[in-house]
Length: 217
Image (tube, rainbow, N blue to C red; front, side, top):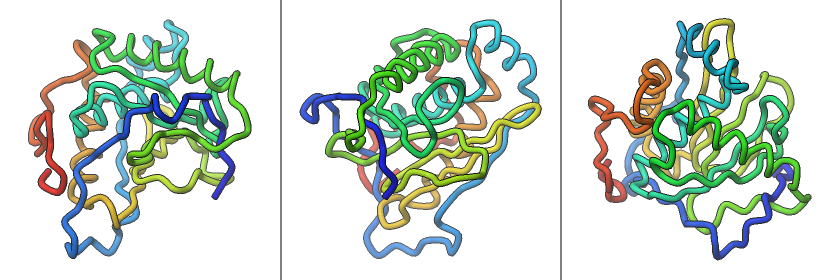
């Protein structure tokens, strides 16, 4: 496993992340290691982000964070983040804490999480990444070269394009169901393409309640 950097969060202070787990013995698609997606036509959003000194990766990570809040039903989570700007390298992400609905818009949430990411990257040590005792989930910006961090139940790998972003949701098929990850991928596209207003929109056909139970989402 690649070496990852710690954001120096005590283990007992990190909430255990939970997502709906796949049913034991269920049949997975043959290509169950990832779900690709793409979102384009974000020129206006990219300009707004740049005026706030944010990158597209900052926005994608914020949208993904909101998605994990929704699917986990947890108000406080800690996700890994790496790559992009002056943050942690993609192969050695750091832990970034988020509180549900602490910011009223996606841009404001992205700014808060970006600040935490960069602060964690500046103070990171060389120890193992501390994401608590729950599922390991995170996002990285990756240009297709070099290694990706290992040991994640769910990892968003994003690559900015000229007018948007391409991404893959890589997942551990022994833990998560491919259909669930496919819905998360579709909802991520929706949230990036409609970023105005509150960062927790009622995505259509999400197939998941605010408090999902394991294996049923």
